[in-house]
Length: 80
Length: 487
Image 1 (cartoon, rainbow over the protein chains, first blue to last red):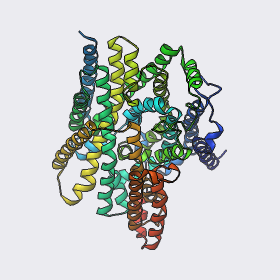
Image 2: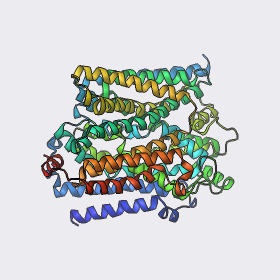
Image 3: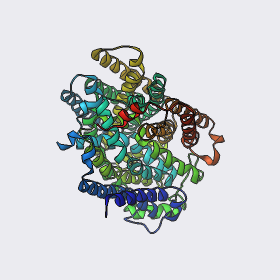
Image 4: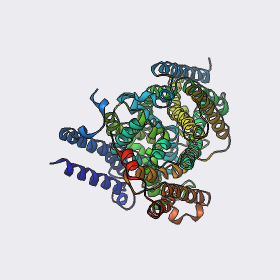
């Protein structure tokens, strides 16, 4: 998978996260049961969403580093 | 020694350690304005992570979060949603802003914006908006510190004395060491409050209900609907979906526009540190889970705290834990308040001086630092006086500030990405957005569908920015290219 595709997928994922964080998407996960690790389902789902954001950005960073795109940036200090 | 005296002693020890760290941190920077404001652009990953996390997870999260979970149920979940989503764009924006800041020598948000749109009026307007949003936010932190100390010392140290002691210490180390003190004390306070939040968040449900699951079962049985979004409003009536959703939106748009967080992009040693902080940020935000559990633990408790913001210290006092442990928990809550309060005090003084006063008065480095220290004291004292007055809920105060701060988002985006934007367009958009936000804040009942006033401000702000920019003369191509280049 190339970097452009990963970036588009990341953007789509973030949009999906936003959809499930507000009306109307949030209505789809808005229930108390089943409890997940003791937490209401909606609370556990929103927690999963924000943890996944970190994971997806981490994957993006790996791909970006592999593609070596950082070379175009003016980040001389990045080398240290 | 009485119970409250032991607690007061533990708090005093904690404050002493914080003061020592804050003062020791000052030896790590140069004595220049860049050293005082931007830490010589030398923050590593550890400090940057905690500065970002602890600055965001303030008294509003540690006291207001449980307060909302306790009083408004699932409405509190909006806080869960906006943090990581609001930080995500910073993965791209942060390094870009840091590059431009390094190239041009910017240390504040207004310097960054007026670097592209040169205008004294714009700079002063941003400084004014920053101050208008910061003062209620600092007030909230000071009040939070006072609430904790008053509650756990059983009223022996009243709110006004407790707040004065805690913030006297904050002002002292910020005056002495600038942003380096903010960075290193936030690291200490961040670790401390995360540990305390998890211990307390798991202990209270276990102690009162037998576990987290049984607690939520009991709440769902007794109060059906309390755990379903959008929860309740401030009056205990069902909150509207528009109110909940616009609170999420306004907060996620505004979260990185807070000048004290935005300016930290100029403190990072490298761009990778900014990206890694965004990636790691959800691990910090996870601390909201135990924070909410603390609030939910109070829902079915027969006795009630004086206000919902008091629920955390109230619940601690109900456990009859040894005073040493109570003191440590209290110090965790103080950490949350002080770690944001110091960044805000430092940020507000930096902004007022660099973006307003220095445009009209020429100051050498020494005079600039003296003035900044005077401003820190002035802002601190003003906020302290306001904190003693009658206040609304901590989260309500913060949400009101977000309305103003999120108006900076279109301005920042146009600064970086829209070549056709003009100074007049930026000024007109920002002014109109702020006026609309203020109008609906003062006339809340007129807000359509209960939408947050910040969203209504943005609905006017963005088209005005675009139309006025297109109607006015474009900026010189050379100027735009030179500003946007990363070299």
